[in-house]
Length: 445
Image 1: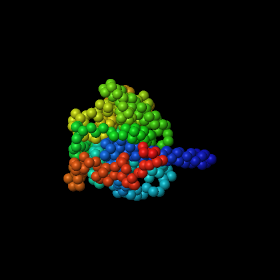
Image 2: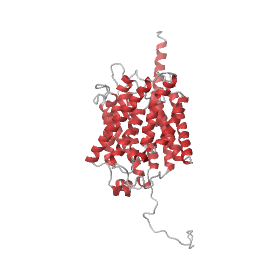
Image 3: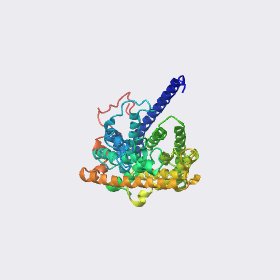
Image 4: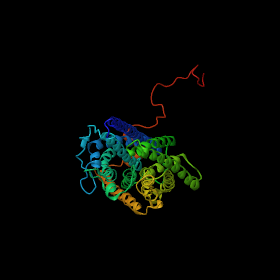
């Protein structure tokens, strides 16, 4: 290599690293924004007596999960495999040990990647809260959030997100099985949905479920939350390219399109079934499309992304009614949207993957059924592991600490009982009695 070119190449490499780092910083901030977005989304969906508790569950998960992630979670997920591709070494990066020095050969700091991945864990735990809304002890929920991160999320993240490189050995799904999951159809969506189902079954139905009206109390909050989630989802998906490159651009477009077609498909089902297209349906359809495109955004073309959104929007719109058929109380449709949507998005890769975007072709693109089988195994393994582990964890916490609030407290409202607050103060609670007289604009002036 001519010596004159070496400084130019060094500058180009530095520019690339700076660009990738800047994009990953922005993407991480966008994923962080999804936490308050989820709090608004879920907060609007519950009854008015549970708004603050629902939001606190999401914000509490943010705090607990990130602390646990730095202490041990990241090391479990991305440390050297301990054997079988099941979990990483919990001591290797404990407390971000050995990660603080800059690597001149890396295109972004490893601490930034670790924080980015930790925010994925935050959203996953936060999603579970929606399945057990209105009836959960806040203190026990915080304990659950930390334990679930260690026992369930970190192992699954190791399976699918930790790729082998050099001497480093990663998880079995990504490296041995060869399943594709760009940004978390297994680790985030199926994982949270299966956990939500397990928790809802163990804790039981809310008082009055199936009898009393339990409609969203504030659809404005739901729409605002859906908008913030959609905005943050670009960091979630496109940020998973880990570079400011063509892959990130394709994923960005696919994420946008799937949200659009998910909205339209859900509304079409509503209009045909109920005669009305609702704002709640629009918000839910956007999220369903985004859930399904999360694993597939790096594997399908833009046309494929639109088909993913249509499939998820329509199927999830029908699936949310399963809780009334099977009598399980998934308060905010975590099962119907995230579990079902995650299954749709993960499995459909085996049908719609295109070699124009990724390394394989799906069944409908002439690639055979091999990738479809791999996706089915990954989806099924995640569902079974998450459901079993979560059911056991919730049962233990219920028996030891008490996970569900007392029935009378549930009826009174967990906001007032647990937090000594109410979301809406609509009455005068103090101050002097107003004086009405001449010049005050009263009826007696």
